Length: 286
Image 1: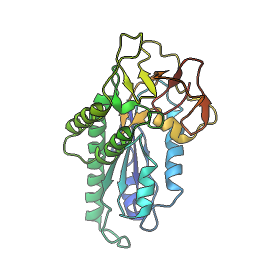
Image 2: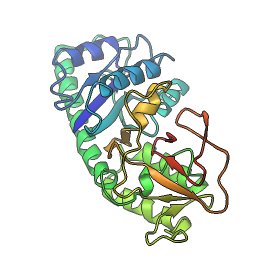
Image 3: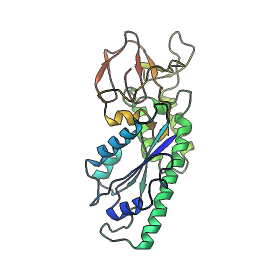
Image 4: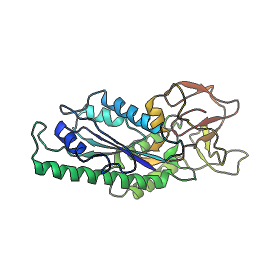
């Protein structure tokens, strides 16, 4: 598995401290992405720049390669930070980090630089450990409520669960306990049901039955798919930093009647098949 990390929001001295010891310490199995900021907050172009760089790396990998995407970000407590972090939902595991110095303009001492390098390495290690725990719930053969399409599974409870997981998994005391509790709460509102003429249970938003494809995994989001945003690729490979099977999709049957179209991973209305629609975790319509 490849675990990539974005370390974002570093001042120039913080960025220099990071680069001085190289990628291996922060992403031994993957890639490190970092850009300095010249003032407190995040430039609007940083999120798309990071997404494109992460996307370009992923499409060079074999499609079956499992990928984990993580983000460590300096929290400036402003709207730019909030907008920046939101751009990584739902594919990244996110965790706030401290700046190299409290005073953005201060030149750090040699001791502060060395201490910060150790701190960043520790935060990267923490993210990798947490991503592995998340993968225990996403990198599985059974149906998982955590991989249901964020757009096409129409449920307020589902949206609330995804948002809570995205904002908390990087910092909660117990990742496993938090995810188990989230799944239990979700299933109180969306218990598994059995579609007509089926021997297997699945999740439903009362519009569609989201059924497992079983061994029929020929349809999935491919790296060479045209017309897709970087976000489409990233969301097809990682969920909250947890890797999952590249060829997973849901065989969706209508509860009553199929809609003419369903929004795909970048919002384009896409026709369903005559009697079903196949939807990937990133909302890609096959």
